[in-house]
Length: 362
Image (cartoon, rainbow, N blue to C red; front, side, top):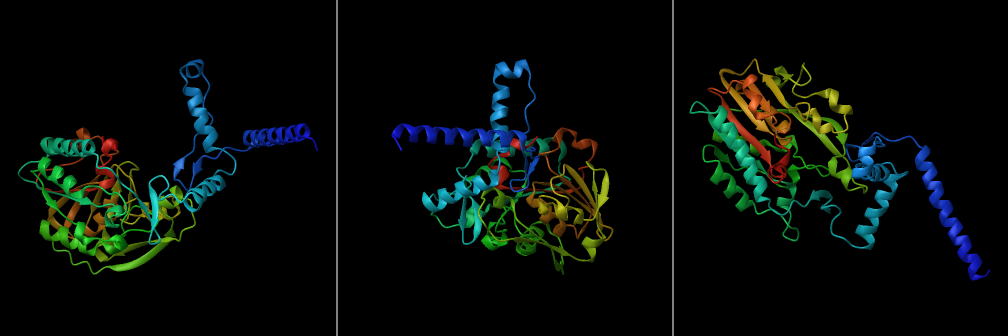
């Protein structure tokens, strides 16, 4: 076969593959959600003359084409295997494997984000809190903190210094030494509720709480965390376990957004894409917890991110009423319409993942 014929065959074969992929991608049904990545996939963009000329249409179409490409998950797995096993990269999109756990490399320290976080907290303090409140805050370390120095990590001493310097009206509860890598899920960023006993003891000591605990530990469901979708290699399952007792079982939770009442552990979330939502129904702007067995003179207000979802149930024992607020989803300036702050204990529970990237706060 002559070189000319070979070139023609190769060209025709290449065009056939490209045209075939184009046709298959055009006729296949679009996927709405990536369960592995826990996000909505880009749908075919609406056409308008304005979007066409300002470039918006083509930008959205490019995202659509990448999100809806046929066998996308297969190609994602192929790419990461080449990156990690052939090219010997240390991480994939800042996620790496260490001791059979998936870790996100959080780095560098974002001082502007920390200042934004403390500014938001200061605004809440100035608007709602006074001498009748006992106010505390704690910082939840990310998994990367517990890894050896071969991996880049945040300057925790500097982070704590900035927070303490800007939040002199609140008492800092340092819980870092109450945790280690085993306290976190292998495939997810969050901590395990069943490993928070030392954290609860530390917080209770600072806040002068009497928490007996006496929990019964129950396995609820297997799950794969958020990193398992972002790092598409075969990894084992984690387990959602809950700690419960008569006090927790007697509590009711009112969800203002959904306008419904649930138990502390929302078992309807067993089939949700993110099974960590079993704890206090997941990402919710405003909740109130009623504890009929709590001290009728004690109430608590918690400002939190998702880490607080599994910690708050372990703090309810002494309080009759607990308000749980996530200001990623509700504007602090309207909280006065829903929350009475006077004579309440207040604690801010934020992870370094949010503190170092606080742009999502209202």
